[in-house]
Length: 430
Image 1: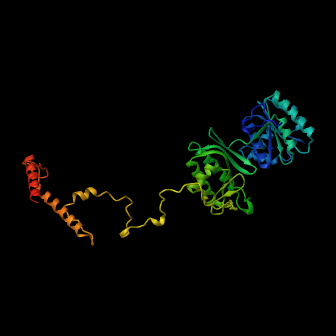
Image 2: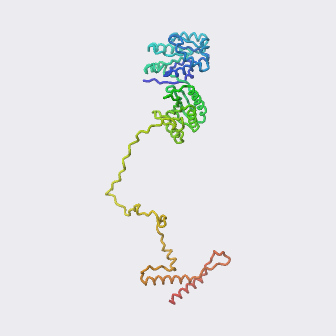
Image 3: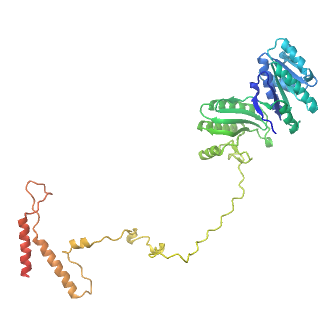
């Protein structure tokens, strides 16, 4: 059954903490232990470096890292505030430091691989007893490359499941930026918006300066790239994306370096692709599986493998013998004229019923078709003549005095009776 592990920053350690550091590179070991030692020296605490022989040995790199934080380790060694003691005499050294008036004691121990498992466990038990009863902080470093996985798990269990890592470079309620060492990268967690984009710009700027001071260690002798693990970022606003693009452009312009975004969320990659920022010189987007989508000026592009298999051709539907044919089949495209006379599209509406119009225009002479019998021509001529005479018998409308020219008043009923009697007289005369 695996034991739950709690990871804490080295700057958050308090008296009574006995934590474990599992490192893979000397840089990670020196960074975390140097912060642990520097915090104790600035708080006027006694710092004891525990080693197997009780000498400085391979602690020169650690002291150099402490000096890089603005402290003079040689002066602290001369005054006795910083001392090197054998790991077997840790309990007596702690009692002597507390009796000398130190407010607390910090124990920094680098576990050697030469010791057997029983000796390592016995040393851890002595340190745990000293920490539990006195104001002592203990930090033990284990090399993950030298020790096996089972030994590392046993060491974590001896420390109560407490692991320590480097303090975050920036942390607030929304964003947290931590340095990673294997591989060298910065890990961002949370959200990037206008409230913390200035602090993120400072962190990225300091990292760019740090990269310029380092030699070229990339593949093929190229400058080392700035990696930003963005797999735990949930949101980036336009100011944050603009900051990433500007950082990539500056790295590319200064020395041909690149900004590598690892594990960016799909919705954030889609925004970068839609805006076109994924083609920024010096910007490379890498997914967690190792594929890259990079810039067109040296960034690695994803390899296009074989696409999905082609879909089978669509078969025409089979005719159903039990299905009835439509009563009025729809004409095919060939039966519909594309253009009418004169190049204009034909009117799809049906022809209007002109029966009423013909009734109103019967006084006009209707054309007689060629070859029609004489009786038809005589009948149409007589009908046209009768309607014309009846129309001429109706007097025109009379305009009322004092009205506008467009306002008319029809004649009194007497005029209408006179017209009717005139029509009757004409019909009787015929």
